Length: 418
Image (cartoon, rainbow, N blue to C red; front, side, top):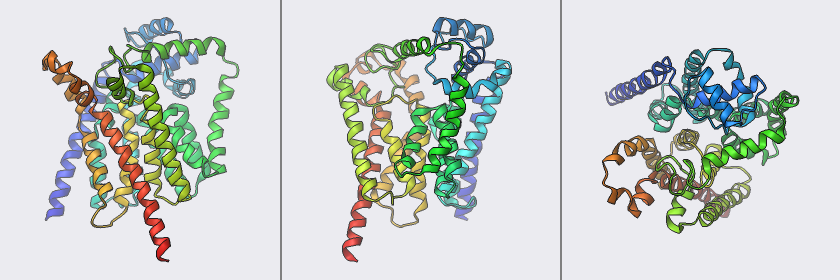
């Protein structure tokens, strides 16, 4: 009886979440509203027509003409992503947008299916139903869908790469990871690095194939790189320079920048010090991760190892909130093991994911206009409340790294008893 009620509750939650995807994602797409995909669509159209896609004024003009964006379009997508998305530009913007989101819905299904496979669960298993429902309710995934973010496709490609590699299909794993890296390097490159560190040569060969194809596509591009590169630098400055929207000083978006610089800047009030602290934290985490993984000769749960490596990448580099969906890979490590009682690190990881699941960014955006200036401008609000998501990501890094260290300790104890 309890299992039946559990499944009924999970089913109702899943239906509500699917309704949110449809009525707040696909239905508004018919109105042609601007989203992340609109910028990607404009850039891909410019690539297909041999134009300088990093020329912001030109991109604004093209966006007004083909997608009615009516806003500045300052592209920082890699050229490889524009080339891969170019086939969508053969459709008018409205229908391309609808098709993109419908395929994105398929990407969500693929994400859940791959997580269930990686956790070694059967579809009818209660743990599989819990995992699927949790992913459907995961707020970063909802943001990815509502915005038409590339994460809808890159996250399942990363999971597919892990699944194929762990089942001996190294070439096809590399192929999937190569496409993931071409679309969103800040996600795909870390999963690819994990397998390259193991000298999995066929993974490298598979990833090399899309790289060669894309290089050939750009070999005769009419706009020279000496023109594209300065334009790209200017666009990066537009978004990430001090005082800009996705920087970490005054003038930046108060809730949507999630690298640790936003925390360190509130402590040190120096751009240089904040960057040094964030990069130092990243290097410490990466060195510890490599020490543990090499000590264990990669004999650690792959979901934990790759999930931890991906989490470390969030410490000092900009990621959208949508990108956090890729960290759900660590949940497979928890659900795969039926050990009872759960270790404290697994319990802490579950609690952190539950907090990450909540729509805190949306809540803060709606709440902040009603908060008095004395509170909204106070140090504790800026340091802890506004940046709560960064603290959760830092906490997740600590817990995952401690879990890896615990694997080393357990292995050493077993070796001493043998």
